[in-house]
Image (cartoon, rainbow, N blue to C red; front, side):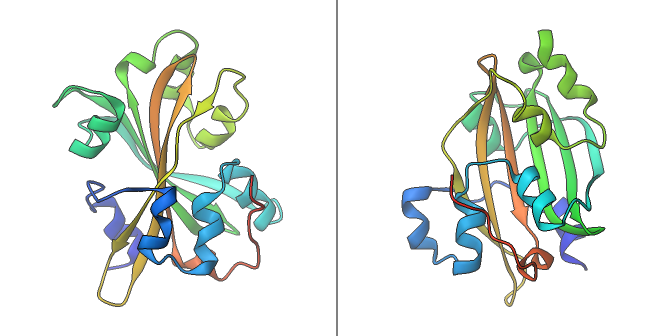
Length: 184
């Protein structure tokens, strides 16, 4: 089963580490800047692909976040949220799998627009909103097979003080790209 399809069914209820513990995970050097950069991942992918960037929506709909996602967002168990899963493509190849959890309470007022992002990057909306504030980054590793590990990061974003969670999983094709984010 290809990596990207197995991720759709993967549990994101993994163990997440704050950045100060990144060394405990032994993340390969190539992934360290991708995992720790606080700038716009969309902008980095646009730069890395020389503008050949697109978003492929895999799924979007109401669902229950897993325990870890609900806990970090302060949501009661079994409360529904808008769950968005996409591939971020560079040169028509999946470079990142992203999963966003948007509580219903966040989708009010101006933030209703988040329900209608479509095939645009959520990052392009977040990083262009003057009220956006980003919480701390957390890092995890997903052991897909005994030979394959994928690296992921997640963080909460706040728009007008309302939270949402974005998890980004870096796919193997990105490792072949000759680009590194500048630390921000």
